[in-house]
Length: 362
Image (tube, rainbow, N blue to C red; front, side, top):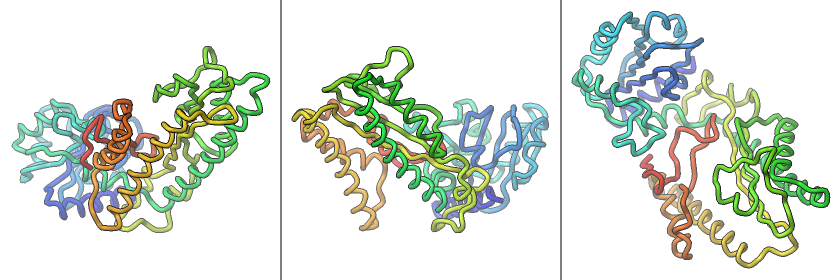
């Protein structure tokens, strides 16, 4: 079973880093990591605890009304009926553990990691168990891609590059008759369907001032008409629909678990800009070149660190790009993290390149 490979990957990490165990808690889909590790066969309505010690079998504590949904979990099933039973069973399950990692981030420093509510943290601590963050453990065990996912991502990225160029061409062809931001977004969505791509939302097609809103999305009513002299930003993301290669990879990446139960297509995500006219104004070109320079500086930093075998944290790559922009005099306008993780959702659960909105130490 695929989740057994995730269990093994997590245990390998815990043994290497001296972590006694990993406690994954979920209540009504509050923790997206839980179903990636132990998917249920149907709707689950009560608190669930999966405990994986550094050695030994996985143990899953669930309410009796949900027990039938986890028959294929690959874990030893423990069933409770009432709150006292839950607390007593949890205490027995954690007996002998001095410390567990949970989806928790001290002072909510990493909101993408901090999924467990404060009351549940208090409950575990009341059992005499120290709670530490699972940030790196969770990423290692659940967020690394399979070879099939990587290839699917590359195919999607190639198609996005093709489609965004077609979208700019579409704008040029429709200028005489009139074309809006929404029209262009609809064109992109049609192309996604034709190429067997899907996206939960988007794309962003933003003209002039709208491009300063990172989450602007044009609507059928009120979107801007594209005119000569406009600055056009297109941010588009998509993934393959039902990609069999990503579901059943031929071989794993080095030390990567096969996660068939939760593995599927992963997103690609790009942002391009264009100027409507024959010659790009000097001011536009200046800002564009600064942004490209910051991107290239961060990429070069990551590549060189990899060549030298130096471990990099997400905030450090952000710092390189931010310093480049600050040196050019525009640091105060860089009000967004450098980059985000990509996975089954366009914003994944792994490390972000972020030293601004958070301080991502993964």
